Image (cartoon, rainbow over all chains, first blue to last red; front, top):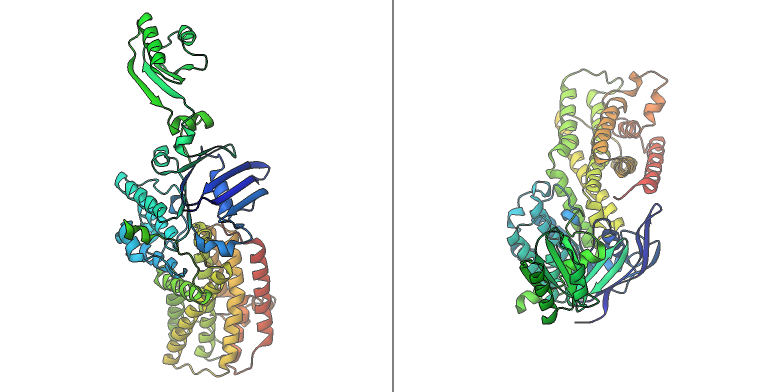
Length: 310
Length: 257
């Protein structure tokens, strides 16, 4: 697998009116990876992706997709890139699911076999039903299949598992893993941190129109910091605990009665915490040592809960 | 897992443009012919009107025999129903559902999409001409005139209506397009010289009605098919004017999303 970049964005700016939706964003999506683009509602994810898909012309900065300019080289780029819009949007309401896939296949030189795709994504029940009467989940899967049918090198998928039941969600995850195994670069916009954590080789976090973190999930969560979490009485006075812990440790009551100590956790730190609890007559229930999760990183960088809005 | 790995191995490439054109035209034609409401406009109403008005003498067709007046008018109605009403409604809803946006990421070039839509309209019109002409012939209609002149009128008439259809579909909401396209259909059916001769209207408004695309097309078809005249250049000029204005405005104001 090549290590070159499938997508390279440099200082991208895109405004709607005078409001910048994307404000000096740079990012790299390595070839052959599943890359998750995460960000809260309105962070600029969709605008960024739409600049890559050629829908929007950047106000400034450069966007290179497979080494090409999505505006100038659109015609050469389109056969090589598959796109799935949010909620599986963008289909002839009167066309039947399978019929639509067969049609899109005809626009490509060497498409996937539609019958196999139908079987893989369990689309058999869309053979007789027009798109407008399919359920949201069925439409999503037709849209995913439509993004793949031309055998692209790169696919942009906007929330491909939104609204799917857990079994179908896993089946879509399997498909995405297979795509990676076959050398396809997958750009995955998602709200599900679990999805990113499970699938992504590379994560880009976007906040306020800028890239605030990128790297592998391990890199993003590895700043040597881990956490100790425990429950006790609400509103404990934490000053003496802070004094007892190493300089760089932080102690917070994240919700009433739930305390999180973030530092380099070693047995000594753990002993300090438990003896402080003993001294203050606190039974540290649910005491748990954990690594920073991708979710922690996301919340720390964006101040937002994942999974809200679009 | 080797077989599944092979399954998604990238092999991108666009089909040749002619193949995309054929596929897109066949696909859109199939969707159109399956669409009940569209068929009502493009087939049921023209045929019913022709049959009814041929048998029930409610309209004074003036100097023309009833069929010589009606069949060219109904042909103009058929052209309008497909190249204006049906095209505007279908394109409006495609825009609303994001079809045009999604298609823009496929290998199908935008120009090929427009040509495919034009070919779809021509295919449906060929079916309509067969249907209306066949019914007319069965009722005893005996046209004269040049087939080429008729074809030329239909093509330029189609362009005139299609420009206006695209303009409407590309600027209004889908629901507004649906309502407006049906309203214009109805108005031109009554006022466009299709089933009521224009000389039944007051002298002052006749030139105005004559300058509508429906008026120009119906009158032009009648002069060829009933009178045996050559290509009616004034009608062609009116239709070409509408076509240029319509497409120029559509090119200027059409929003793909």
